[in-house]
Length: 216
Image (cartoon, rainbow, N blue to C red; front, side, top):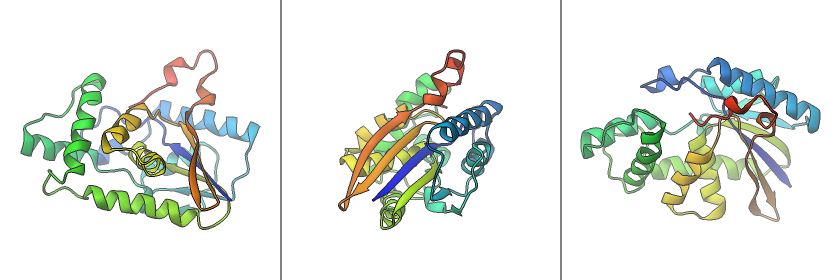
């Protein structure tokens, strides 16, 4: 049996307007990761492998958790949201969001156009994103052990979509709920993927940490 513990990276640069400037943890993002690492050390600290994407915010989350990274894989990198948003504005006249409320409306629009191949010139087609994410999950599940994976919200949303057979609209609603530094458990038993836990934040449930429950 393989058990996958997926962690979304800590809060990144929420004020960014491009991929490069977004790809760094905020001070709060580092703190979220430290708290999560402390929680895992106190509960079930053993992992046979620790895998991250190649993005700075993913690697730095694992390091701030106090973990030793055993592998990095670009298939765990996030979808190119800013490029998709720019394509949506250029080709459909739908502007980029200016605040979290607008983002909650904007993200499903992006995912809808992307899944229908209605956006030209984007870095990655939806079918290719789906193939790389499901491919690495299936590959990891060919082995055994307890594996921690630090990745991003879009990747986790795709994994949940893959397991539950969600429509694409369901995937975007899942993505909007995934908190920074949240924990998601996937089990591979008898050749079947099962979702054992979603969006857990036990390290942020203590009094005084309400401010650290962030989505962007």
